[in-house]
Every structure is written in structure tokens, then in C-alpha cells.
Amino acid sequence: MRDFTYYAPTEVAFGKGAEQRLGKLLKRYGATKVLVHYGGGSAERSGLLAVVREQITGAGMQFVELGGVVPNPRVSKVREGIEICRREGVDFILAVGGGSVIDSSKAIGFGTPYEGDVWDFFLGKAKAEKCIPIATVLTIPAAGSEMSDGCVVTNEEGWHKRGYSTNLARCKFAIMNPERTYTLPAYQTACGVTDILMHTMERYFSLEDDMTVTDAVAEAILRTVIDEAPEVLREPTAYRHRAQIMWAGSLAHNDLTGCGTLGDWATHHLEHELSALFDVAHGAGLAAVWGSWARYVMETRLSRFVRFAVNVMRVENDFTDPRRTAEKGIEAMERFYRSIGMPTSIPELIGRPATEEEIRTMADKCCRQDTHTEGNFKVLYRKEMEDVYRLANV
Image 1: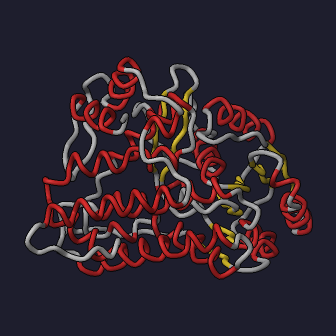
Image 2 (image 1 turned 90 degrees about the vertical axis):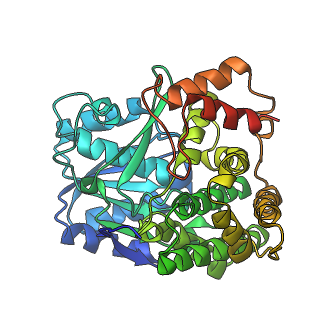
Image 3 (image 1 turned 60 degrees about the vertical axis):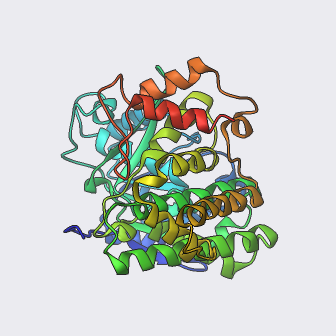
């Protein structure tokens, strides 16, 4: 078990009508002029933006707006937000949406007081020293960005997708009303479920296997999401099921399931190159590559995959053949992904096999031209990255 520091400072307002607490929360955290940052038209059509505007003005504050955030948020939109914040004297950023909007807001937050270009943070050339306070009204349970310290942004120049983490960018508060997720399309719901599962699994597949409490929490989250996902897809307006998914999304990525362990994260970073190159949904990309990663690294600590198979996927333990038990666990997870409409290979994800040139390009970006490795459960170099992509390409 590793020593750890657990830090989760975000205040959570959860439940029906939680957005009605927005004005009081903004006031409590000292906001006077707010940038309302959001994605497409759904926030407007649903009436949520109208509620947000009423709450802000009713609390005696001013606001400016910036919409247009897309999945795999772009650094160009971040730069636009930075310019607005500087020009308008914004002192608080409110993300209305899901992980892409929150990630974009975080980058605007620490990019605004920085004198250089915000992409410097994602290249490792700068470290955030200040950040405009950020909060969110969450509409898509998936990324967990509402309680995490990280954000991921895509640079259209070269289509590089990179992440940056700083505690300065953690949301001051997160408003979560499961009713606001009722209208999510089934595919987007399934992508979110996959991301939630993977945030937990990236931490769960660790070479440290003596943190019993952390493992038990992770396994409970995984089982709950797997059980609740079909119910949500079958009955999209069932509050109870939506609420479980929404809260699981936060618990999966607020570092609780990583206390005392060292996570892997190779699947996430391999996927980042998939979604950067092909602009696919992040959750779908994770489902497409995870099984191949799992089979590639399984022998490193077979007992971990056996535990996953038995405790999470409810596979009967064949004590005479642990490898087969582990394989059945991977197969069971892939069956689950397919049952909710997720792909389990690259051809299913993009509609064709990736070319050898595309595989080499993704691996080259992932290893940053042989200057970077991925993974802790098993360290992946360029060759291993290409191997995993090829396994996922059939």
C-alpha cells in the first residue's frame, strides 16, 4: 500500500432542483462577474440556461456567455474564453454541461492569469500558479471533471490531445440534478457509463493489491454502474437509476478509488490519440481499446484480473485455470460494452480498420516521439503501444 494524500474540496449540491441553489453558492464563493461556458443548444432548449441566468442576475451578479464547446474540447475555444475573461474582468467561471465544458473552463481558468499561451501547460512548459475560481452545473455524468484536478484539451494544429492537472482548477462546487440527464441520447449515456467504469478501472488495475478498502469501494462502484446502465437505457427518466450513475461518475474520478494505489492510465492515453485522430467519442474509444490492452498486460499480475473477473464481473472462479478465469472476466466486460451499444474494436469504432500509418502515427504521438512511456501496471513503449493498437484493429 502506498502513502497518499486525499484532497476532494468540491462542494456538491445533489438532487432534484439543485440548480435553484446556484445564486446562493456563487455569492458564497465571491463571484461578481461570471463567464457562463457551455456547449451546444441543448442547454438552451432544455431551459437550463434560462434558470442559470435568472439565478445569477437574481443574486445581483453580472455575466457574459461563451458557447460552442465540442466533444474533445479545442484549445482555440479556450483561447477565446481567455480573451473574454481578460476583456470583461470575469472573476468566476461557470461550466454548464459535461466534461468537455468543464475541461475547457478549467483551461480558461488557469490560462487567463498566465502571460504566455495556455498550450504551454499541456506541453509541460508552464505550471499553473493562479486560476479563476470554477464551478459547474453538471448535465452529463461521465468525465468526473466536476471533482477532479485534471482537464484534457485538443490542439487543432497537429491534432494533439493532452491533459494537465492542478488542484487550483478543482471546481469550488458542483450542482448535480439527475433530472437534467433524462434527455441524454442512449449513445451518449453509454459513452458516459464507459468513461465512469474506465476511471475506476484505471486505478483498480494496480500492482499494489493490499489496499482492501480502496479495492472494495472500486468494485462496488463498478458493479453498481454495470447493474444500473441497462436500467437507465431501458427507462431514461427513472430518477433512481440516473442518480446512481451521476454520483458514481463523481466518485470514480475524485481519486477516492485510487487511495493507496498507483493507477495505470495507458488505456486513457491510447484512446486520446484515437479521439484526436478520428474525433470519436471518448467513452466509445475506451471501450474499443480496453479489451486489447487487458489481454496484452494480463500476465503481468494475473491475480488482479482474476479478482476483477470474480468480484466485478461475477465470473465463477476456476481455481485450476486462473488464466481462463481472467480471460472470462475480460470477455464479460466486452459483452457488457456491446450490450449497451459500445464498440470493442477500432474497426467497430471508426467503420474500418486503421491503416498501419495511422497506427504508427497514434503510437508516435502517444510516446511523444520516443520520449514518454505509458502505464504502470505494465510499462508501454512505442512498440507495445503499436501492439495494443494492432490487437484492437481486428
